[in-house]
Length: 207
Image (tube, rainbow, N blue to C red; front, side):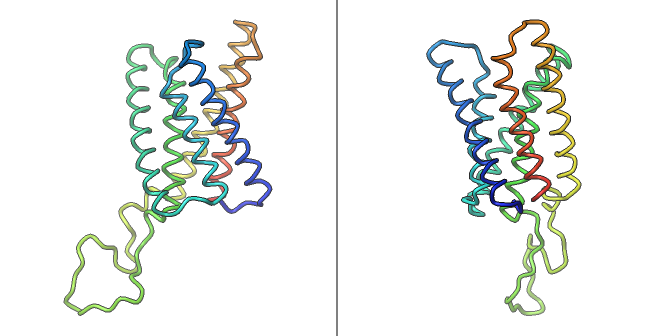
């Protein structure tokens, strides 16, 4: 992330707090206090931890590739659950699962950028006979088939989707406060969600 050091460390601290919040919810549910979606909480905690590592620059290309594959699986899991929830409950029940699905998609994009996935291979310094061919390798100037994973257009779509989900979260929080009258408990989750959204947008813009 090409951003000032103070901003990266501030966002990293926020992501640590987010990860701790969701891990605490998991621990609380484990002892029978509170009903939660464990996969959603684990997904948010994982995003907080990995985003922290990305912000402080402690991920290698190989680790970024491995983590990207994990978040691809997570994205597909939450997307499939969103479809199932839509069939059962309609659009109203999709939001809580669509949010981590979009978050995982953004993670895949950012990790792919860090891993250099989708870049063209110039094969500098290699000498081959004119008749040699290497199947599956991109030649100089030839874009990789995976270039779509790191395209600016996809990054823009993910930024817009993240902003839309942030607006949806604020709207849902206001409705819950009006109906239930409890503004303390839901505001913690809202704050963590907005922190993730802001950090995601910053990292996507400054990739």
